[in-house]
Length: 569
Ligand code: HC1
Ligand code: SF4
Image (cartoon, rainbow, N blue to C red; front, side):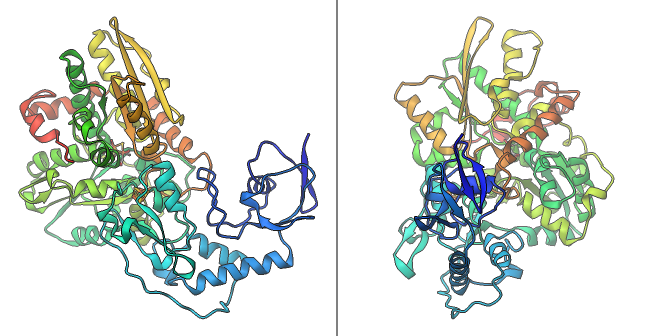
């Protein structure tokens, strides 16, 4: 058994890749800005310093554990260096903490407090660089950047986009979009994974809270909301008083009514409807020699990625709109009459785990006569902020149900929020349609979990269906390259831009729990199991919605006009 010593305690080495991981395992939470177990090691922030006997002071993140090492995580010299590093960062940091979106959730604030940095011995020198608000999804404030490079690495390594990079050197070093342009002018797909790893407020989701409050306080407006699947298993973490991954939907509905939303509906209803369209489209492609593989289309980060890098693939992407967009379309068409409100006074708000949904909602193709189908998109974090601003103790509220009929969904619609969920829901629909028999069991375990690529070949009515699920755009790029080179062949592929799917979207609470994706997904799969109706095709209210408003069946002319889309390069 190999061991080393941390602060005079003997600790076993059990495959840890670096001293930092091993020291954390030993119960010492060494501060760092630039270390993320899922990203490459950068070693720039110089906070994770340790003293290795006989070797001197070094960064623990970039030092491999060796048997017999004698390590001290806290000496007088290290303590001084850490403090100096943090004070230097604070001296050049735009310190508007109380009004910063990341206040109380900021690593710089946190580390300064823990180290006891009470005064900054260096002169405040802020460059006052312009704040970039060009993106519909994100706001970038370089004056709060600590140059850890986490955003640069997540964007290039996990997403294979590379929209951000370092520019200049020394005291002029900055993180910028390519050619120092604005975020909206580069390849950024709005996924918000950069905001998730940013330790400070240098990249945050763009807030639409004020517009939503204005609509709520406007007596002429009826404000309705749709809530995405993944929100219900993330929101509780931010609000407190709930277990990680707990589905808080029913208390959330009560809280949203207190906030002033007139009706609260479920995006999962539209997810069921998406399956009607998308699975029908897939079966049509399969039977009539259509373009295959077909890729899912509900993730706007992935769609923009494909439009940017693989325009030749656009015919392969399902033309079915995302559940958010389908919901917007249904809302505009059916709710004014149902709620007795003038169309112009109906305000449609989405609550999404995702920053790219803000981008999707403002695309002209999802509007009619200049009015977007979805007026405003709030992230899970923004909803939590609204709830907290009113002092609502959500965990103490009585539960209530989503409003009907757009609040009814099957388990298939709920699992959309986890990687593989869209595929599983589509298979529940398609397999039954092709085989003509009720299916059992209805779970497709092959599509679940966090493997970078999940694949399976299914035998359905003598036909072989080859399916694949990827999440994280670097994994998507790899799959697409293999398909293009003829090295992999599939009929149907699900892509979600964020690793883990929407449960880990750019608008979800930031979590430092290493299993947060699994725990949130488990909340969705448990909900699915508990539902009486699990197959999207059994959603009676969706049938009714088709009959009343969308030409009676999936794939109808009316459905094509209002529930499908087109892509551009
Ligand atoms: Fe998602 Fe979807 S699952 S894209 O992750 O298809 O955002 O939750 O709402 O639209 O339903 C996000 C989640 C969401 C859509 C659905
Ligand atoms: Fe990169 Fe996504 Fe951030 Fe855009 S939103 S800069 S694509 S990580």
